[in-house]
Length: 112
Image (tube, rainbow, N blue to C red; front, side, top):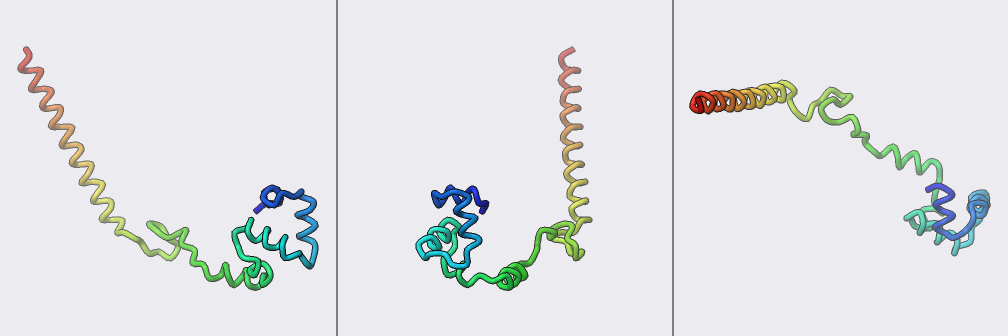
């Protein structure tokens, strides 16, 4: 959360937020308000260490590349099967278009 948003949430100035950030000790009342604004417990703030953050983020599995083109080369689907599906769909659409054109030609012949 940015300082401006935190300051607005707590009803204090940005300078007051900066002062709190620089201080080693924070009053329990202020700490509880800050924790509430951040959506965490005051105990989480009290027990915070930089090492705990690294451990926390190292537990995530980055699946952002997962899917059709993941970095480890695994696919959620067979690309050849998908290609065949696309060709089959295209074939169906072409047949529908051809049938529609034949129907138009038949109507035009009958209208003469």
